[in-house]
Image (cartoon, rainbow, N blue to C red):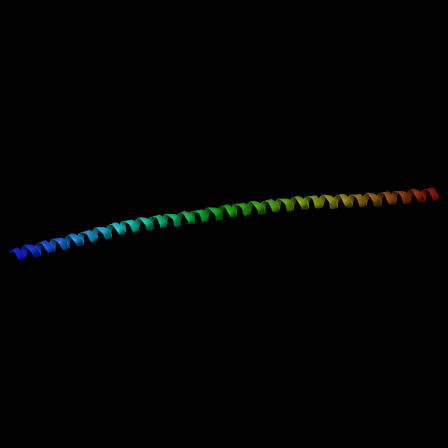
Length: 109
């Protein structure tokens, strides 16, 4: 009977040790799960930051393209005005030259 009691006490002690090991493993698993969740959240935040940066870069790029297009349009308009002004100036010079030639011709007669 004493032997049975000792065996039972040993068995209980082993079960308690196993319980402690199991609790320790559970706690380690919870801790690791928490670390994994934090890591996952950090990764998600990085992905979100990347997406926001990409959107911002695309917006800046689009604004730059629009600004460049507007500058080109303005430059083309200005170029057209200058070309028209030069053409009008040449027409006026030609008209003046023709008028002078006509007046010179009239004086000679």
